[in-house]
Amino acid sequence: MSRIKELRASIGKKLDALEHQALALEAQLTQTKDQALQRLEQRKQQLRDLLKQVQADVQKSKEMAGQAKIEVQAKLEHLQVQLALGKADARDTFEEQRTKILKALNEFESVAEQKLKGAAFESGRVWEDLVGRTSTLEAEFEALQGRFESEKAKQQVTLESKKQELLTKLESFKDQLKAKRVVVQAKADVLETDLREGLDQIKSGVRRLFE
Image 1 (cartoon, rainbow, N blue to C red):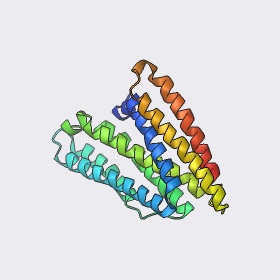
Image 2 (image 1 turned 180 degrees about the horizontal axis):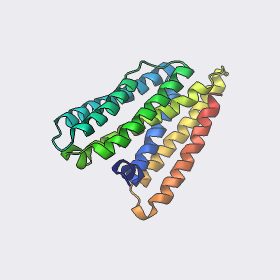
Image 3 (image 1 turned 30 degrees about the vertical axis):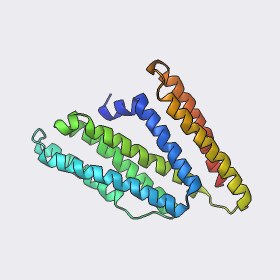
């Protein structure tokens, strides 16, 4: 199993990913669409900042062959270009941008794990940061996707009532998440499954809210 896949499969990163999704959903319920889009832009910028450091590490690495550097730089620059695209405030533009960024990210990860060599990469520090920042970005994309699906007008009273109900469920979910982080590893897989099922129910509620 690759380093990135190992990290994502770890219980710690799985719980982190669930927390990122819960926070992104909470933002969708408490912020305007413009604010939520700005939040997405911040996540994109955070990943771009990390990639700048990766680029610097690649350039100064003495363990990597010239051809390997060229291949990594090409995928790295392509991903940076996709992340630098402007704010997508229409559904079609959003979907196109989301697809391109996630595809470029997957391609960069594939070549990076094969080619990147040197202390910064072998220590796992870069992979830890990469998994964390991509997880937050993916969570924002997923939460916003439901909002773009349909934005029909609803009675404000009903909308606010449903929002509060979902926010209460999210608060409870986050409390459960904090408590279950301290449970022993032997029970971790079962607990992660329980948490994911709970979050999936909340996601369905959020999607119905914007239908």
